[in-house]
Figure 1 (cartoon, rainbow, N blue to C red):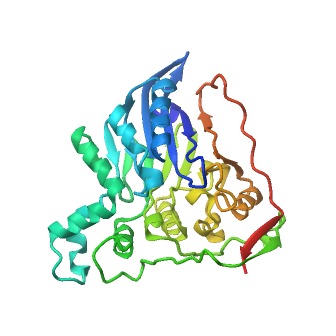
Figure 2: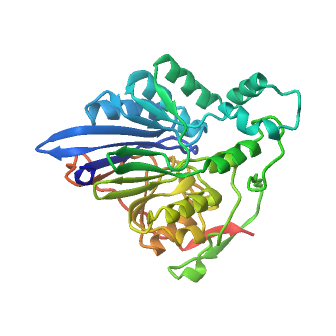
Figure 3: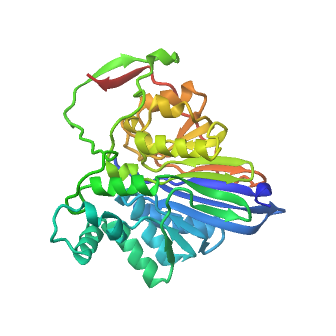
Length: 364
């Protein structure tokens, strides 16, 4: 039945200044004659408190319900987690998908260098360092909402059909990233975990790009990003005729491993409708190698009003245009996409795609 479903997905704006964030809502079901039958609502990240309240209003006024079937936190950064507080407080949430690193004492205790660390001190320290996620856990417990650990392969399914599939990270990668964050007691770091350091004073130079791939300035394969970003859930949505890839703030390592898993599971990422560009369009989170396995009609970047030129990077937007993935950005406006029989909304206008930038800045 899900193959006949209609779908609406909305990328809400987050941030009036330079700080970007993600806040996504979607609903799906059988739509006919102005009625949504068997409607399901999912909220993915909440941005900040302002966008979280906007999500609540959107679900109530546009989706015409107080019920959210799944709340999904891609990773515990403030710009993704803070806005989920009003969602959980003001709406009826059935289930939450989120990682709770403080629950992994059994998996991580043998790697802790300091022998004085106990399960209790480990749990308290990690909860304190992931305060935004811990706040959500407390709210969930107060409201008797079940929390599920969304490791690779988890699905939100109807019968034999998966509507949402977690492509990454795997539990092994996730645990190695938790070890590498510095938010846990000192640990022997797995080889697969990396930390990234970037200089705010790094010099840049201006270069010219055109539609020729030889002028592209994306990294070829791998570029380090923070462990917290690479913890991001990467989600494949397949509902009705819609295929959407959501990436949170995932880096090139997380993206590659998710692509590898999708390939193993025979889940092609070559026929997407929407590709959600990771980390607000940062060029450090996307590579030519990963894009070899991804194609979509449209690409979307969630970015704040004053996020440019890093959020989004013109280099990334140019890369989407070269590959025929028409790019759009929120930057203070809501972006809405409809599939199947989902009706158009009164008062909404057509969004303008982003354009090619001929002069870009790269590290000198």
